[in-house]
Amino acid sequence: MKRVLKLLGKILLGLLAIPVVFYVFLVLYNLRDDALDPQVEKIMAAAPPQIPAAENGYFAWVGVVGPADQDPHAWGQRWVREALEADKKAAADLNASTTLSIDAEKRKDGLSNKGIACGEKIETCLETVAAQPDAARAVLEKGQVALARGDAALAYPAYQEVWRPEFSYTSPIPGYANFYRQLSATRFALAVAEGRHDQALEQLGSEMPFHARQMAGAVTLIEKMVAVASLRNDYLLLNQYLARHPAEAKQRAESLAALLAPLSADALRFQGIWLNEQRSGLRTIFSLKDMDGTALFGVAGADDGAGTWFLSHFGKPLLLVNATANEFSRHHDGLLAADALSGAAYRDALARTKHDLEAATQDTYVLRNPIGHILNAIAIPSYDSYYLKRDDLVALREALAFQLAQSRSGADGEAIAQALPAAAALVHPYDGVAPAWDKAKRTLTYAALPARNGKPIVLNF
Image (tube, rainbow, N blue to C red; front, side, top):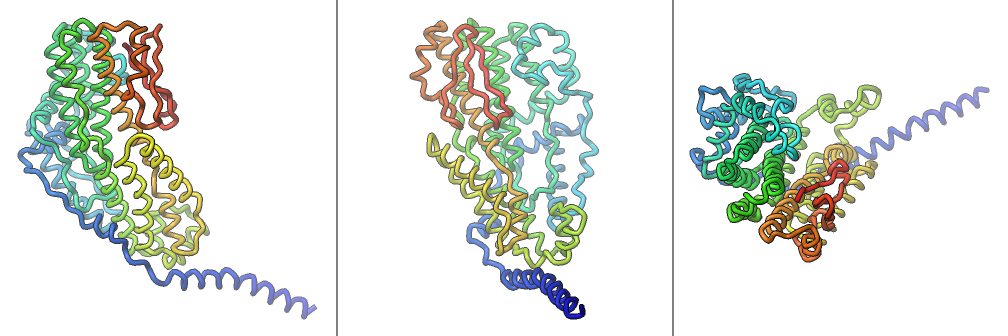
């Protein structure tokens, strides 16, 4: 019996020794970190030149939400100064509060999407306001401060989102002037309903170039997408105008054609955005170097329990910060490459990037830098939907230019159907599919896509 117990004890010790030996092997295998890739060093050292603050409409745009008795440009500069200080604190301590005291000064206009005629459904904005003009006038009266401050931002000759050298995922972001977009759409629709067509188009003639400047001057992804969404709304307003007021549109065809000028390469490009997304992620990764195990896996979002206890006490040696940073950066290479392509090559590059990201999230068990590999698999989002939103904007512009051309020529439904096959520019950049024409309903439809929450894009002619 003693011999059996002795044998069982040896077997038990052997079994217990296996994970210990394996852990020691992993530690030894991960004893030395990698050198940083040159591209990572270059990204972290970037510092783009800034335009003069006095010319920069970004400050005034940030200041749209500020107190009514303060200049929006000056208030926006104050907000940025506080944000820069908060960035420094966040860089030193990921758990530091990034709440800005200046945010307590934000103006409260008592507005909501539900209470604004063009707040919830921009696609029916002109129809809604034409049916309820008094309600539109009332909400415009309520939002007159927001409109005035937004209009002041539009008047600045240039726009550049301010460079924040220590910007990270925990940094504060501006309280974007959400209701200016809805209010300005309502104002446009009311001007059209009241027959003030030239005034309505003059308004869009100020707003649309401003949103294009926002797209070109954006540094962060959220800034880019806010500008994309704003310009998309403007395009949808023009679609309604062309469909509901064809005679007036035909008289003003030259003005409308100017509004539908192609967007610049700078406005459409994502390269600077992806580099800044890398920069923000890399800063977070480098901050892990000085954290103890408990703080590190708290930031990583590990669940409480035995797994967290083990990681907190034994996981840190299995995290190689430089190797993690290099891997994180390489995951963005496909995005950067796709941004410089078009047509089938662009779509193929997006598909490869999506496949590589999905593979990275599934292949979580590696011997080299296992913790860093897992963190990257968790942290790297799919940027697919952002390309789709940008491409939707390109498709919308082309479809509206086509709609305007058909309106000018007086084409009927059959003539439009015959013109479509030759309109190669209408092919959607994202999926390479042309829109479908419904002669009976007079609608041009881009097919529903999963990345667009299963929704189509429908334009009324």
